[in-house]
Image 1 (cartoon, rainbow, N blue to C red):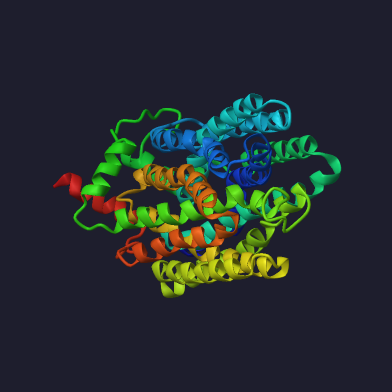
Image 2 (spheres, one colour; image 1 turned 90 degrees about the vertical axis):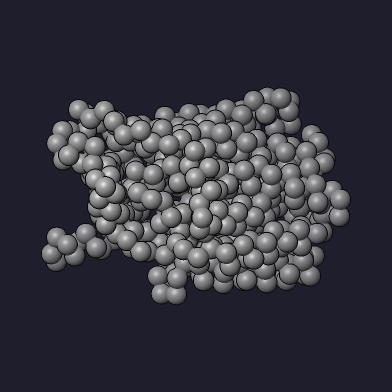
Length: 443
């Protein structure tokens, strides 16, 4: 195989190891969303208030993540521009995560304090964990690579939801400590197997800054890049509105998904419709979304390569809408409810695997991948802040049994917005984009 052919081929093993950064977020947040909500409901017994506190980590993240994505674009160290933040964030998140159960059934303020510091730690490195992949992977392979990254996050979710079931027997404190240990082990493997100085996108940026001369240790950032809010301003004022409508669609479907994930175990558990009898089992049920998501993540990326990302996302949203309708009609039957969750997971794979890839392709240069990742998370995390509260408030207003219907409304809105997204497929290679940028600078 020639050098050029190797460049064109996706390195599956490397992509797997890169995905460990995202895996740490999946395994911790899934257990967090399945158990912290039930602890909060014990204290508050009001859906909307539980939703507000479940959105605390996302409220923190909406300020930290876009900023940290932009900061990492300008960072130059021997470890790279993403890794230093991933190391610090993962270790601190693991520590505070292990402390969260000390607030269960004792004092709500203790619980909120540990939730707050956990949210800060996660926000510190999540944008970098996601931006690491496009630094290594060339544009034509990013749908497949993002499928693998999401698969890694899904594996983390399955582990977390399964441990939620085990917590009925060994206790939540032990389970939270186990997940913290898993996070640190995953970080160690990531540092062992991934060398950021080998990232092709990072090399291109360094060459652009230094004319191909100098080492990573020598280089000081000399290119002034716009901040996240300046980037958002540019997106809003663009004549062609594909980026804006893409971000609005992302906002809509994450209101639904984050609201459902944050509240589902309460909805299905002893405090809700009593579909299952224990909290551990209620936390386990979302596996029926996570497992189909994992199974269909890679096919979802492959399908996008055949028929286009935008069409794949639309199909996924139609599948999700079918799941919402079926779940609403048959939710009191556990078997039918699980079928609805499986269908939901299949559709979500088509949507989630391909959405951020479109945002990356809309970015004007390799330099701004981190910044546009920050823009993606600005809208998705803002939706995650509002989603649990909005869905929770609607459940307070219309009843617990309307969860599927309320989520379906926002998925329908996202489906409509996708018809206004006209770009986002692969148009130029990363090298061509850099060459075009240099030509424009000369002019």
